Length: 430
Image 1 (cartoon, rainbow, N blue to C red):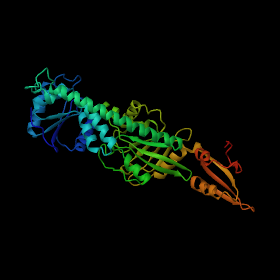
Image 2: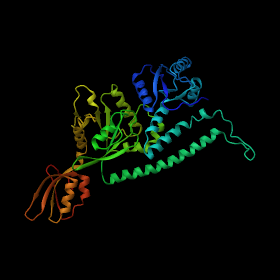
Image 3: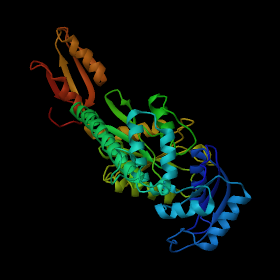
Image 4: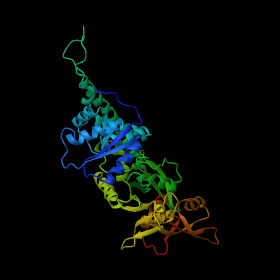
Protein backbone atom coordinates (compact mmCIF):
# COMPACT_ATOMS: atom_id res chain seq x y z
CA UNK A 1 0.00 0.00 0.00
CA UNK A 2 1.12 3.60 -0.50
CA UNK A 3 -0.15 7.01 0.48
CA UNK A 4 -2.39 8.43 -2.25
CA UNK A 5 -1.41 12.02 -3.13
CA UNK A 6 -3.79 14.97 -3.08
CA UNK A 7 -4.93 17.05 -6.05
CA UNK A 8 -2.55 18.95 -8.34
CA UNK A 9 -0.31 15.98 -9.07
CA UNK A 10 2.76 16.02 -11.26
CA UNK A 11 1.90 13.46 -13.93
CA UNK A 12 3.83 11.25 -16.33
CA UNK A 13 1.89 10.49 -19.52
CA UNK A 14 2.16 7.04 -21.13
CA UNK A 15 1.27 6.23 -24.73
CA UNK A 16 2.42 2.73 -25.65
CA UNK A 17 0.71 2.14 -28.99
CA UNK A 18 1.74 3.92 -32.18
CA UNK A 19 4.85 5.57 -30.79
CA UNK A 20 4.99 9.32 -31.33
CA UNK A 21 1.32 9.75 -32.17
CA UNK A 22 1.20 13.54 -31.78
CA UNK A 23 -2.59 13.70 -32.12
CA UNK A 24 -3.32 11.21 -29.32
CA UNK A 25 -0.55 12.59 -27.13
CA UNK A 26 -1.84 16.16 -27.50
CA UNK A 27 -5.32 15.00 -26.55
CA UNK A 28 -3.99 13.08 -23.53
CA UNK A 29 -2.10 16.19 -22.42
CA UNK A 30 -5.28 18.28 -22.69
CA UNK A 31 -7.24 15.67 -20.74
CA UNK A 32 -4.60 15.71 -18.00
CA UNK A 33 -4.62 19.51 -17.77
CA UNK A 34 -8.43 19.55 -17.76
CA UNK A 35 -8.37 17.15 -14.80
CA UNK A 36 -6.04 19.47 -12.89
CA UNK A 37 -2.79 17.51 -13.34
CA UNK A 38 0.58 18.93 -14.40
CA UNK A 39 2.20 16.84 -17.17
CA UNK A 40 5.95 16.70 -16.53
CA UNK A 41 7.10 13.89 -18.84
CA UNK A 42 5.95 11.56 -21.60
CA UNK A 43 6.86 7.90 -22.09
CA UNK A 44 6.03 6.41 -25.48
CA UNK A 45 6.32 2.94 -26.95
CA UNK A 46 5.05 0.79 -29.78
CA UNK A 47 3.58 -2.47 -28.53
CA UNK A 48 1.36 -4.45 -30.86
CA UNK A 49 0.07 -6.70 -28.08
CA UNK A 50 -0.30 -5.32 -24.52
CA UNK A 51 1.63 -7.14 -21.82
CA UNK A 52 -0.96 -8.95 -19.65
CA UNK A 53 0.86 -8.01 -16.44
CA UNK A 54 1.79 -4.34 -16.91
CA UNK A 55 0.57 -3.45 -20.43
CA UNK A 56 3.95 -1.95 -21.38
CA UNK A 57 6.38 -4.82 -20.66
CA UNK A 58 9.31 -5.20 -18.29
CA UNK A 59 11.85 -2.95 -20.06
CA UNK A 60 9.43 -0.07 -20.62
CA UNK A 61 8.22 -0.43 -17.02
CA UNK A 62 11.78 0.12 -15.78
CA UNK A 63 12.05 3.22 -17.98
CA UNK A 64 8.72 4.49 -16.65
CA UNK A 65 9.79 3.86 -13.05
CA UNK A 66 12.99 5.85 -13.56
CA UNK A 67 11.06 8.68 -15.26
CA UNK A 68 8.67 8.87 -12.28
CA UNK A 69 11.63 9.10 -9.89
CA UNK A 70 13.54 11.65 -12.00
CA UNK A 71 10.54 14.01 -12.19
CA UNK A 72 9.22 13.27 -8.71
CA UNK A 73 5.88 12.46 -10.27
CA UNK A 74 2.86 11.61 -8.15
CA UNK A 75 0.63 10.22 -10.88
CA UNK A 76 0.91 8.14 -14.06
CA UNK A 77 -1.75 8.56 -16.75
CA UNK A 78 -2.15 5.86 -19.41
CA UNK A 79 -3.70 6.72 -22.75
CA UNK A 80 -5.22 3.23 -22.86
CA UNK A 81 -7.77 1.18 -20.91
CA UNK A 82 -6.09 -0.94 -18.24
CA UNK A 83 -7.38 -4.09 -16.58
CA UNK A 84 -7.73 -4.07 -12.77
CA UNK A 85 -4.74 -6.41 -12.42
CA UNK A 86 -2.59 -4.21 -14.68
CA UNK A 87 -3.42 -1.12 -12.60
CA UNK A 88 -2.65 -3.03 -9.39
CA UNK A 89 0.69 -4.34 -10.70
CA UNK A 90 1.73 -0.93 -12.02
CA UNK A 91 0.92 0.82 -8.75
CA UNK A 92 2.89 -1.81 -6.84
CA UNK A 93 5.94 -1.31 -9.06
CA UNK A 94 5.78 2.49 -9.34
CA UNK A 95 4.45 3.33 -5.84
CA UNK A 96 2.28 6.09 -7.31
CA UNK A 97 -1.32 6.23 -8.42
CA UNK A 98 -2.03 4.90 -11.92
CA UNK A 99 -5.10 6.04 -13.85
CA UNK A 100 -6.13 4.83 -17.29
CA UNK A 101 -7.91 6.85 -19.99
CA UNK A 102 -11.39 5.87 -18.83
CA UNK A 103 -10.67 6.80 -15.22
CA UNK A 104 -9.22 10.14 -16.33
CA UNK A 105 -12.30 11.06 -18.38
CA UNK A 106 -14.57 10.00 -15.52
CA UNK A 107 -12.62 12.26 -13.16
CA UNK A 108 -13.09 15.25 -15.49
CA UNK A 109 -16.80 14.50 -15.76
CA UNK A 110 -17.05 14.36 -11.96
CA UNK A 111 -15.53 17.86 -11.75
CA UNK A 112 -17.74 19.34 -14.47
CA UNK A 113 -21.17 17.93 -13.54
CA UNK A 114 -23.42 20.65 -12.11
CA UNK A 115 -27.00 19.44 -12.32
CA UNK A 116 -28.55 16.77 -10.11
CA UNK A 117 -28.97 14.49 -13.11
CA UNK A 118 -25.41 15.05 -14.32
CA UNK A 119 -23.96 14.19 -10.92
CA UNK A 120 -26.03 11.01 -10.77
CA UNK A 121 -24.90 10.00 -14.26
CA UNK A 122 -21.24 10.54 -13.41
CA UNK A 123 -21.54 8.66 -10.12
CA UNK A 124 -23.20 5.75 -11.89
CA UNK A 125 -20.40 5.61 -14.48
CA UNK A 126 -17.74 5.81 -11.76
CA UNK A 127 -19.31 3.06 -9.67
CA UNK A 128 -19.56 0.75 -12.67
CA UNK A 129 -15.92 1.45 -13.44
CA UNK A 130 -14.50 0.95 -9.95
CA UNK A 131 -16.67 -2.06 -9.09
CA UNK A 132 -14.16 -4.24 -10.99
CA UNK A 133 -11.22 -2.50 -9.33
CA UNK A 134 -12.11 -2.78 -5.66
CA UNK A 135 -9.56 -5.51 -5.20
CA UNK A 136 -6.81 -2.88 -5.42
CA UNK A 137 -7.74 -1.20 -2.17
CA UNK A 138 -8.86 -4.13 -0.06
CA UNK A 139 -6.58 -7.12 -0.73
CA UNK A 140 -4.80 -6.47 2.57
CA UNK A 141 -7.97 -6.99 4.61
CA UNK A 142 -9.07 -10.31 6.08
CA UNK A 143 -12.64 -11.14 7.01
CA UNK A 144 -14.33 -8.58 9.20
CA UNK A 145 -13.39 -8.98 12.82
CA UNK A 146 -15.46 -11.26 15.00
CA UNK A 147 -15.97 -11.38 18.73
CA UNK A 148 -18.56 -12.48 21.23
CA UNK A 149 -21.88 -12.43 19.45
CA UNK A 150 -20.23 -11.61 16.13
CA UNK A 151 -18.58 -14.90 15.20
CA UNK A 152 -19.64 -16.76 12.09
CA UNK A 153 -18.70 -17.24 8.47
CA UNK A 154 -18.54 -13.47 8.12
CA UNK A 155 -18.21 -11.35 5.01
CA UNK A 156 -14.99 -9.99 3.59
CA UNK A 157 -14.55 -6.24 3.31
CA UNK A 158 -14.42 -6.67 -0.47
CA UNK A 159 -17.76 -8.50 -0.50
CA UNK A 160 -19.29 -5.79 1.67
CA UNK A 161 -18.08 -3.05 -0.63
CA UNK A 162 -19.35 -4.83 -3.73
CA UNK A 163 -22.74 -5.32 -2.10
CA UNK A 164 -22.96 -1.65 -1.08
CA UNK A 165 -21.86 -0.48 -4.51
CA UNK A 166 -24.43 -2.73 -6.17
CA UNK A 167 -27.12 -1.30 -3.89
CA UNK A 168 -26.05 2.29 -4.69
CA UNK A 169 -26.03 1.56 -8.45
CA UNK A 170 -29.58 0.25 -8.18
CA UNK A 171 -30.69 3.40 -6.31
CA UNK A 172 -29.07 5.73 -8.87
CA UNK A 173 -30.55 3.79 -11.77
CA UNK A 174 -34.04 4.16 -10.32
CA UNK A 175 -33.56 7.93 -9.94
CA UNK A 176 -32.21 8.25 -13.48
CA UNK A 177 -35.14 6.22 -14.81
CA UNK A 178 -37.43 8.77 -13.17
CA UNK A 179 -35.46 11.66 -14.72
CA UNK A 180 -35.61 9.93 -18.11
CA UNK A 181 -39.40 9.70 -17.83
CA UNK A 182 -39.51 13.42 -17.10
CA UNK A 183 -37.30 14.13 -20.13
CA UNK A 184 -39.58 11.91 -22.19
CA UNK A 185 -42.57 13.96 -21.08
CA UNK A 186 -40.74 17.10 -22.20
CA UNK A 187 -40.06 15.56 -25.61
CA UNK A 188 -43.71 14.50 -25.92
CA UNK A 189 -44.83 18.05 -25.02
CA UNK A 190 -42.55 19.51 -27.71
CA UNK A 191 -43.87 17.04 -30.27
CA UNK A 192 -47.45 17.89 -29.35
CA UNK A 193 -46.65 21.56 -29.77
CA UNK A 194 -44.83 20.50 -32.96
CA UNK A 195 -41.76 22.57 -32.13
CA UNK A 196 -38.70 21.28 -34.06
CA UNK A 197 -35.58 20.45 -32.07
CA UNK A 198 -32.02 21.11 -33.26
CA UNK A 199 -29.17 19.41 -31.42
CA UNK A 200 -25.58 20.65 -31.27
CA UNK A 201 -23.12 17.78 -31.51
CA UNK A 202 -19.42 17.55 -32.15
CA UNK A 203 -16.01 16.82 -30.72
CA UNK A 204 -15.29 18.21 -27.30
CA UNK A 205 -13.98 21.80 -27.36
CA UNK A 206 -15.24 22.40 -30.91
CA UNK A 207 -17.12 25.51 -29.75
CA UNK A 208 -20.65 24.17 -29.29
CA UNK A 209 -21.44 26.17 -26.14
CA UNK A 210 -19.98 29.36 -27.62
CA UNK A 211 -22.19 28.89 -30.68
CA UNK A 212 -25.19 28.12 -28.45
CA UNK A 213 -24.67 31.36 -26.54
CA UNK A 214 -24.15 33.37 -29.74
CA UNK A 215 -27.40 32.09 -31.28
CA UNK A 216 -29.66 32.22 -28.22
CA UNK A 217 -28.11 34.89 -26.00
CA UNK A 218 -27.79 32.35 -23.20
CA UNK A 219 -24.99 32.34 -20.66
CA UNK A 220 -23.95 28.68 -20.78
CA UNK A 221 -20.44 28.09 -19.43
CA UNK A 222 -17.97 28.02 -22.32
CA UNK A 223 -14.22 27.58 -21.97
CA UNK A 224 -11.23 26.47 -24.04
CA UNK A 225 -11.04 23.09 -22.32
CA UNK A 226 -12.26 19.55 -22.82
CA UNK A 227 -15.75 18.69 -21.58
CA UNK A 228 -16.68 22.20 -20.47
CA UNK A 229 -20.34 21.21 -20.97
CA UNK A 230 -21.92 18.11 -19.44
CA UNK A 231 -25.49 19.06 -18.68
CA UNK A 232 -27.81 19.59 -21.69
CA UNK A 233 -29.33 23.07 -22.02
CA UNK A 234 -32.38 24.04 -24.06
CA UNK A 235 -33.35 27.44 -25.45
CA UNK A 236 -35.91 28.66 -27.98
CA UNK A 237 -34.51 30.18 -31.16
CA UNK A 238 -36.52 32.17 -33.70
CA UNK A 239 -35.24 31.39 -37.19
CA UNK A 240 -37.95 33.54 -38.83
CA UNK A 241 -40.91 35.45 -37.42
CA UNK A 242 -43.00 32.39 -38.29
CA UNK A 243 -40.62 29.60 -37.23
CA UNK A 244 -39.33 28.90 -33.72
CA UNK A 245 -37.17 25.90 -32.84
CA UNK A 246 -35.63 24.48 -29.66
CA UNK A 247 -31.81 24.44 -29.66
CA UNK A 248 -30.12 21.82 -27.45
CA UNK A 249 -26.49 22.05 -26.30
CA UNK A 250 -25.12 18.59 -25.44
CA UNK A 251 -21.97 16.93 -24.12
CA UNK A 252 -19.02 16.73 -26.51
CA UNK A 253 -17.65 13.49 -27.92
CA UNK A 254 -14.13 12.16 -27.80
CA UNK A 255 -12.14 9.24 -29.18
CA UNK A 256 -12.88 5.95 -27.46
CA UNK A 257 -15.68 7.42 -25.35
CA UNK A 258 -15.92 5.06 -22.32
CA UNK A 259 -18.84 2.65 -22.53
CA UNK A 260 -19.65 3.45 -18.89
CA UNK A 261 -20.34 7.04 -19.92
CA UNK A 262 -22.41 6.09 -22.95
CA UNK A 263 -24.60 3.91 -20.73
CA UNK A 264 -24.84 6.43 -17.87
CA UNK A 265 -25.62 9.39 -20.14
CA UNK A 266 -28.29 7.47 -22.05
CA UNK A 267 -31.07 9.94 -21.20
CA UNK A 268 -28.88 12.92 -22.12
CA UNK A 269 -27.78 11.42 -25.43
CA UNK A 270 -31.40 10.60 -26.24
CA UNK A 271 -31.92 14.31 -26.87
CA UNK A 272 -29.47 13.91 -29.76
CA UNK A 273 -31.17 10.81 -31.14
CA UNK A 274 -34.63 12.40 -31.21
CA UNK A 275 -33.63 15.78 -32.66
CA UNK A 276 -35.12 16.84 -35.99
CA UNK A 277 -31.78 18.25 -37.16
CA UNK A 278 -28.19 18.03 -35.92
CA UNK A 279 -25.61 20.79 -36.21
CA UNK A 280 -22.27 18.97 -36.34
CA UNK A 281 -19.91 21.63 -34.97
CA UNK A 282 -16.34 21.18 -36.20
CA UNK A 283 -13.15 23.01 -35.26
CA UNK A 284 -12.06 24.23 -38.69
CA UNK A 285 -8.56 24.96 -37.35
CA UNK A 286 -8.06 21.32 -36.26
CA UNK A 287 -5.06 19.81 -38.04
CA UNK A 288 -6.72 16.39 -37.90
CA UNK A 289 -10.12 17.63 -39.03
CA UNK A 290 -11.10 14.59 -41.10
CA UNK A 291 -10.19 12.10 -38.37
CA UNK A 292 -12.05 14.12 -35.75
CA UNK A 293 -15.16 14.30 -37.93
CA UNK A 294 -14.98 10.53 -38.45
CA UNK A 295 -14.79 9.97 -34.67
CA UNK A 296 -17.96 12.00 -34.12
CA UNK A 297 -19.74 10.04 -36.83
CA UNK A 298 -18.64 6.82 -35.12
CA UNK A 299 -20.08 7.92 -31.77
CA UNK A 300 -23.31 9.04 -33.48
CA UNK A 301 -23.51 5.55 -34.93
CA UNK A 302 -22.99 3.99 -31.48
CA UNK A 303 -25.92 5.92 -30.03
CA UNK A 304 -28.03 5.29 -33.16
CA UNK A 305 -28.18 8.97 -34.14
CA UNK A 306 -26.39 8.62 -37.48
CA UNK A 307 -29.68 8.63 -39.38
CA UNK A 308 -30.63 12.14 -38.18
CA UNK A 309 -30.13 14.82 -40.84
CA UNK A 310 -27.23 17.15 -40.13
CA UNK A 311 -25.59 20.35 -41.28
CA UNK A 312 -21.84 20.63 -40.74
CA UNK A 313 -20.81 23.85 -39.02
CA UNK A 314 -17.11 24.62 -39.52
CA UNK A 315 -16.36 26.86 -36.54
CA UNK A 316 -13.33 28.96 -35.52
CA UNK A 317 -12.57 30.32 -39.01
CA UNK A 318 -11.11 33.37 -37.24
CA UNK A 319 -8.08 31.14 -36.58
CA UNK A 320 -7.58 30.48 -40.30
CA UNK A 321 -5.79 32.94 -42.58
CA UNK A 322 -8.05 34.27 -45.31
CA UNK A 323 -11.09 32.18 -44.34
CA UNK A 324 -14.43 33.89 -44.91
CA UNK A 325 -17.99 32.85 -43.98
CA UNK A 326 -19.66 30.78 -46.67
CA UNK A 327 -22.58 28.42 -47.21
CA UNK A 328 -22.03 25.06 -48.93
CA UNK A 329 -24.83 23.29 -50.83
CA UNK A 330 -25.30 19.89 -52.41
CA UNK A 331 -26.38 19.13 -55.99
CA UNK A 332 -30.02 19.68 -55.02
CA UNK A 333 -29.21 23.14 -53.67
CA UNK A 334 -29.78 22.17 -50.05
CA UNK A 335 -27.38 23.55 -47.37
CA UNK A 336 -24.84 20.99 -46.16
CA UNK A 337 -22.12 23.09 -44.53
CA UNK A 338 -21.58 26.56 -43.10
CA UNK A 339 -18.23 28.22 -42.29
CA UNK A 340 -18.52 30.54 -39.28
CA UNK A 341 -16.85 31.95 -36.19
CA UNK A 342 -19.06 31.71 -33.12
CA UNK A 343 -16.54 33.83 -31.22
CA UNK A 344 -16.74 36.83 -33.57
CA UNK A 345 -20.23 36.22 -34.95
CA UNK A 346 -19.02 35.97 -38.54
CA UNK A 347 -21.28 33.77 -40.65
CA UNK A 348 -24.07 33.39 -38.07
CA UNK A 349 -26.70 34.88 -40.45
CA UNK A 350 -25.71 32.21 -42.98
CA UNK A 351 -26.19 29.49 -40.36
CA UNK A 352 -29.63 30.82 -39.44
CA UNK A 353 -30.49 30.94 -43.15
CA UNK A 354 -29.38 27.31 -43.56
CA UNK A 355 -31.47 26.12 -40.61
CA UNK A 356 -34.45 28.09 -41.87
CA UNK A 357 -34.11 26.52 -45.33
CA UNK A 358 -34.06 23.04 -43.81
CA UNK A 359 -37.47 23.63 -42.21
CA UNK A 360 -38.82 25.73 -45.09
CA UNK A 361 -40.74 22.75 -46.50
CA UNK A 362 -43.01 23.00 -43.48
CA UNK A 363 -43.81 26.65 -44.28
CA UNK A 364 -46.92 27.73 -46.16
CA UNK A 365 -48.23 31.06 -47.41
CA UNK A 366 -51.87 31.95 -46.85
CA UNK A 367 -54.24 34.85 -47.51
CA UNK A 368 -56.61 35.05 -44.53
CA UNK A 369 -59.68 37.29 -44.51
CA UNK A 370 -60.57 38.50 -41.01
CA UNK A 371 -63.99 39.91 -40.14
CA UNK A 372 -64.25 43.12 -38.07
CA UNK A 373 -65.05 41.16 -34.91
CA UNK A 374 -61.94 38.92 -35.13
CA UNK A 375 -59.31 41.34 -33.80
CA UNK A 376 -57.90 38.67 -31.48
CA UNK A 377 -57.19 36.42 -34.48
CA UNK A 378 -55.36 39.26 -36.22
CA UNK A 379 -53.21 39.75 -33.13
CA UNK A 380 -52.40 36.02 -33.02
CA UNK A 381 -51.37 36.06 -36.65
CA UNK A 382 -48.99 38.95 -36.03
CA UNK A 383 -47.56 36.97 -33.11
CA UNK A 384 -47.23 33.56 -34.81
CA UNK A 385 -46.67 34.34 -38.48
CA UNK A 386 -44.71 36.63 -40.79
CA UNK A 387 -47.20 39.14 -42.15
CA UNK A 388 -46.31 39.94 -45.76
CA UNK A 389 -49.15 42.36 -46.47
CA UNK A 390 -52.43 43.62 -45.05
CA UNK A 391 -55.40 45.08 -46.96
CA UNK A 392 -58.51 46.62 -45.36
CA UNK A 393 -61.94 46.59 -46.98
CA UNK A 394 -64.90 48.97 -46.77
CA UNK A 395 -66.74 46.76 -44.22
CA UNK A 396 -63.92 47.08 -41.65
CA UNK A 397 -62.44 43.67 -42.24
CA UNK A 398 -58.96 42.93 -43.54
CA UNK A 399 -57.04 40.37 -45.57
CA UNK A 400 -53.61 39.32 -44.34
CA UNK A 401 -51.08 37.53 -46.50
CA UNK A 402 -48.96 35.58 -44.06
CA UNK A 403 -46.21 32.97 -44.05
CA UNK A 404 -46.28 30.46 -41.22
CA UNK A 405 -45.58 26.82 -40.48
CA UNK A 406 -48.17 24.15 -41.14
CA UNK A 407 -47.99 23.37 -37.43
CA UNK A 408 -48.97 26.91 -36.45
CA UNK A 409 -51.68 26.98 -39.09
CA UNK A 410 -53.23 23.90 -37.53
CA UNK A 411 -52.97 25.40 -34.04
CA UNK A 412 -54.79 28.57 -35.09
CA UNK A 413 -58.13 26.70 -35.23
CA UNK A 414 -59.65 29.25 -37.53
CA UNK A 415 -63.39 29.89 -37.04
CA UNK A 416 -65.60 28.37 -39.75
CA UNK A 417 -66.57 31.83 -41.00
CA UNK A 418 -62.97 32.90 -41.61
CA UNK A 419 -61.96 32.62 -45.25
CA UNK A 420 -58.55 31.00 -45.85
CA UNK A 421 -57.12 31.04 -49.35
CA UNK A 422 -53.91 29.50 -50.65
CA UNK A 423 -51.26 32.11 -51.11
CA UNK A 424 -49.18 32.71 -54.28
CA UNK A 425 -47.17 29.66 -55.22
CA UNK A 426 -48.88 27.49 -52.59
CA UNK A 427 -51.27 24.86 -53.86
CA UNK A 428 -51.48 22.78 -50.70
CA UNK A 429 -54.71 22.62 -48.78
CA UNK A 430 -55.30 23.84 -45.27
